[in-house]
Amino acid sequence: MIIGTGVTIGGRAGHHEVPIIGNDTMIGSGAKLLGPIRIGRFASIGANAVVLSDVPDFAVVVGVPARVVKFLTPDQVPDYFSFSSDRT
Image (cartoon, rainbow, N blue to C red):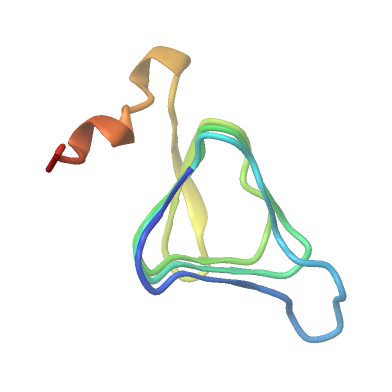
């Protein structure tokens, strides 16, 4: 899982549950995940998106409120860890 800076993951008024985030997801900087939602495996959430409903597996979501703009196939999922530099 990759989580950018300034991401909010939390509850929402009137709900006691918090988001459940699947494996191998990427959450862009400034995104807000609010309420009892499920983020699917291999999902990508754009920077500053406000996610208020479930995100399916392999979906790319953006916007306020977030909406699905694309579905990736398993071979299209980026290897986000390859973007980091090894500074050892």
